Length: 376
Image (cartoon, rainbow, N blue to C red; front, side, top):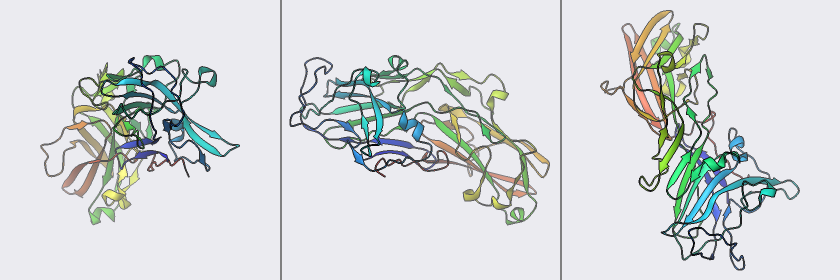
């Protein structure tokens, strides 16, 4: 068994916590399971493998998130009786036994958020529903989070990211969320997904003449030219009782850009000149700002324009539109996607620029695919 944290090609990031299956569990007439079930002849719910007799390695960029564990709630049956109410799940390593595991059983004296008892499957009470948030919030912040059968509330703020001369603002996506439904006691996966969007901008030239000439690019600027551009949100709320989807929530208390400066996503100056002779295809594009992309609040109706200098000749506010359909020049940024805008400068005389907006899976995080196998 393994816990994996996969990020898909430029968009969809996954963290999988495999739960070992189990047998029967005791039931309660209450809405919440309170008793400690009798463990005799039963296999408990476990996240990941109970013990891994091998050194643990983690892909670059994931260790901080994994070390903080995750928060999970679990409900059973059509009435959704509460089995786990915001249980804290921790990843621990025993250097003496050379074993690693995900665990949630313990007390406050063990430095858990609350006293948490072992849970067991109840084969008479399917389906089971799991909701989770990663990384686990700080103990003093957990009471402000709602992770129930009806609602997910993340009360902490979200902000958009900009980039100046190759240095992105220090904005990190604070949380990933997961939901999973199971109708049999089998291996349970919790796919964690981004609730933010990402955008990135690659520039290249398909002209062999330009590729062999002195083609220097500088003073690149990408800005939003539409109204109502969202730069921050006070939190995230999903009403599961109506929408039924933890990823169809809304970013609350939204702040929109009030100045043109707030709409500037990235810029470089004359000292950051890029020789474009090798940027001759989409696979070798020069990514102005960051190849990883810039975090954004998911929103609709975003319209973008790009400016740049080529050998000191200035080209100003060229609207980014879809290649072959220039009538489409506004874009909707959705949760768990990265939007790659490829700008092809195919001619200089006359200037010919082709834009190809691509939507691909979000795998390009920290420059590498993340596949965290806790067994290797």
